[in-house]
Image 1 (spheres, rainbow over the protein chains, first blue to last red):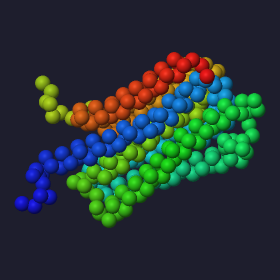
Image 2 (cartoon, chains in turn yellow, blue; image 1 turned 90 degrees about the vertical axis):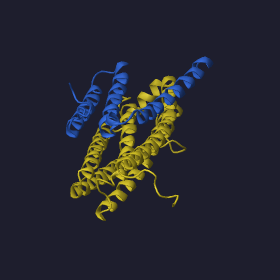
Image 3 (cartoon, each protein chain N blue to C red; image 1 turned 180 degrees about the horizontal axis):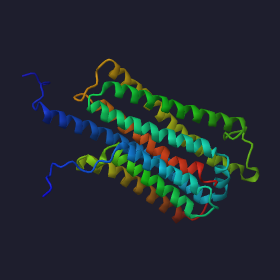
Image 4 (cartoon, helix red, strand yellow; image 1 turned 135 degrees about the vertical axis):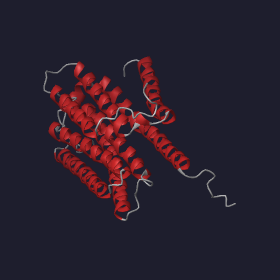
Length: 212
Length: 96
């Protein structure tokens, strides 16, 4: 007997495979919780030490763009979740449309983020020798802005990965490689996408609302 | 008697999305109130509820088997441990 031949076949095998896949993804997401979590803990400790500088730092944030970006990400998650249901219902055109909207919203998020980064750069708010803000509190303010760039930057890198993964799903769907029996890739990428959304949900109050 | 195979409560995704946007509006609106210590707590509490909705309905934890729920909870548990021990170290050494 070929050792690659599965011992269990049919529905039971498919269900076991799905559980294994999702378990693997959740274990990966657990490591991601700790990756971002470490930074959230550093943020909390420094905010406890320098509350005034963090409030001042919060006032350099663009509240409306941050709020808009949160709405953009929440909407992208909705479309990702609808795509997951659509692939299981074998609605291929709906899957294509939802994945496309998810990609566009992801790119819109990254566009708004780039605009914000550029505005910070132009206002000399990037930590380093060109930093011009805060007066006597400049060192503490730089800690806040360093955390802002590190945490939203790491998040943005995850977004770029997410957009690439959803684009791969779109290519699979266009070539007819997704079906109710082969819906797992959508669920896997969806879990990742929603997780990255959750990280932003916490970044929003910590950076955009702290100065208000 | 309710059959075991009865589908569990499954709200339409649009309802979950509506709740998420309402919570975002609530969070954003709170920032227009005068500064107060509770606003940070409120902002984080709203973020936690939003994450709960996303995890339960978009990430389908509500319908997952126990093993996957345990793994998801383990992530939160390790993070709590990390935060607790790090804070303990910080407070034991006194202010910088």
